[in-house]
Image (tube, each protein chain N blue to C red):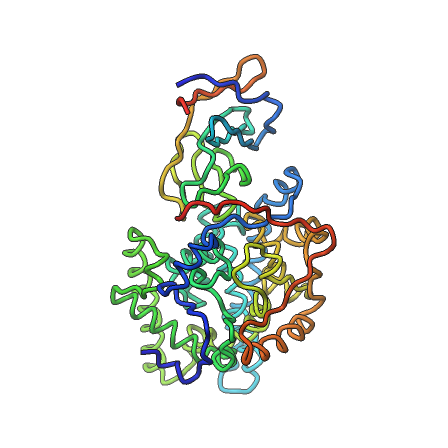
Length: 363
Length: 105
C-alpha cells in the first residue's frame, strides 16, 4: 500500500520499473538505445576528458573545510541565534553540495585516482542518505535510459508532477523518512522491486552491508542526542539532509523538469542553465546538464569548455536559474490538468539529428 | 586465426585508440603512451557501447557511457558497472602497419 497516495496526483503512465512501461520501452527500442551526441573533435574531446587530482582535491578541501568551519562555529555558538546562519550554510554544504560530489564521484571523473573518487563517493552517499551501491546502479540506469518511463529510476518530475511531495521535499519532509525506511529495509536484507530491476545479484550483499553501516551511524547519532539531551549531534549528522536540501531542489529540478520523456536525445529531455560561479561551485557545474549526459566522461571542471564546443548544436541554455524556473513552473502546473503537455526544446537551424538505428542489445 | 592488416600506425594517436571493423565484428586498437599496441573486442560487455569513444588511461580503457574500465592487456573488467572481461587479440607492427591476429570472423 502506498501511504503517500493521498498526496499524489494520478498519472496516466506507470513510472515503476516493474510495471508494463518497462516492457513497452523495450518493445519501442527505448531501452539501452543509442543516443544522439553532438560530434566533437577527438583531440579536443580527449583533452576535455582528462582528470586532475589537483583540481578535485582543491575543490573537495574547500567544500569539506567550509563544512568543518561552519560546523565548528555552529557548535561554539549553539544556544544562541548566532548559530543559525552557520547551520544554514552547513546545511547547504551537506544536504545540497554533497549531491553533486556524490554524482561526480559516482562517475569516477572528479579525481584521476580511482580510490579518491570512491572515498568521496562513500562520504557524499552517506550525507545524502543514499545507499552507495544501490545508487551507483540507479545512476547507471539513469544514464542508459534518461527519462524513459518504466526504465529510469531517477525521474524527479513525473507527468503530472507530484507537486505536493516535491514542495515538502524542499525540506526533505518526505525524502528523508523515505530514505531512512529504504536503508532500514536494505539493512534487513530486502530490495524493493524497482531496486531488484537494476542492482545485479552479485552486488546485493554489499547493498545490505552498506545499509547496516549507515544505520549504525544514524543509530549512534540518535544515542548521542539522547545521552546529551540535545539535538546538536543530529544538526551535524543526518538532519542537514533535510534542512539543507532546499538549494539542491532549486538547482537539481532544473535538470529535466517539464521536458520531453521517451526521447533518445538529451537536448530535448535535459536542460543547461547558466549560473553564477558560487552556485556552480556548490553544484559542481551540473548546470551543464545536456553536456554531462552527452559526454559523461568529461569531468565537472571541463564542462564549461564542452558547453562552448557543442552549444551551436543545442537549444539555447536558460540564462539564469530564475529563467529556468519561469519556464518550468507554467509547464508543470499545466501538466496537472494535461499530463501530455511538455516543453518542446527548439534545436538551432542545422542542428544534427539522431539517425534511425537499431537499438543496442539489452543489458 | 588469421593475421589481418588493420591500419597504418599513424592512424592511431599515442595514448588513444581507434575502431576497426572486420567481418561484421568491431574491434579497438590501442596505442599507449609508450608506443605499445593492443587490441580488444570493440563493444563494452556491459551494454554493447563502442569503446572507441572512451578514454585510454595508461593500460585501462574507460567506456564512454557508464565509465566502466577494462585492462587492455588482459581484457579484465576493472570497475563497475562492468564485470565480464573483454576478448583480447595479439597485435604486432609490421612495416608501419598494425596487424592483428583475429579469429575467423
